[in-house]
Image (tube, rainbow, N blue to C red; front, side, top):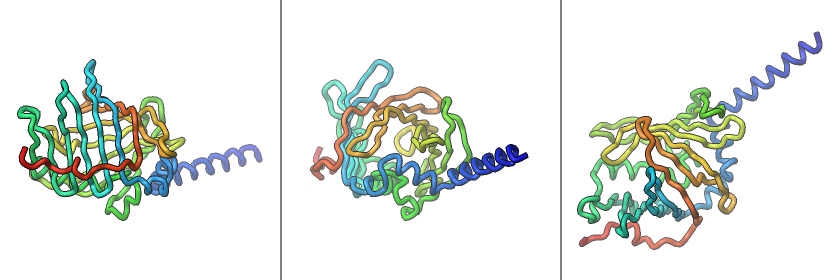
Length: 251
């Protein structure tokens, strides 16, 4: 009888741990601690990431620059020609036209969406998420491959899609054992495929100055394999010239 009683108490104790681990704040805090901790993440003022975008057998060099205040620039090089996939200087969003190879201001809707997210999401969307007006909700568990994951829905500031203001949310999948982020699902927010479902797998985690980063992000769009971004180098708090984010007038 004592043995059965002990087993029941242990089972109840394990159930309590599972319930506690599934509260939004505990999941978020577990993830942030696993990533490096709130204090460490708060020291990030700028980032420079260099790597490549792999699409089937094609590999394209890519550089991603980010700075506090919402500044962002993603640049690829194709056949020696530099293409700005997206840039934002805190006021204006722009990119390189794939046909004319000239810089152009992004659509009003795309610019609005970029503005809504870039500042609040840097360096991590979960850092002080409540003060940003975001909400988090645990939605149970689901397997990612063979890994049992906690599903967490993060709802952010509403965005515009096809002239309609819509909810902007992502479902994040965290390893239930160590809170490592394995996958996210949501809708694409910008460009011609705006509103299309997208899935991102995060792999090859490495520490840079005590902060954990995924060095590989594999994308699936509407269930189909898309591009993979492979990061080769990350610099934390590099000095960035503000001019690189600004739309080049006169071109």
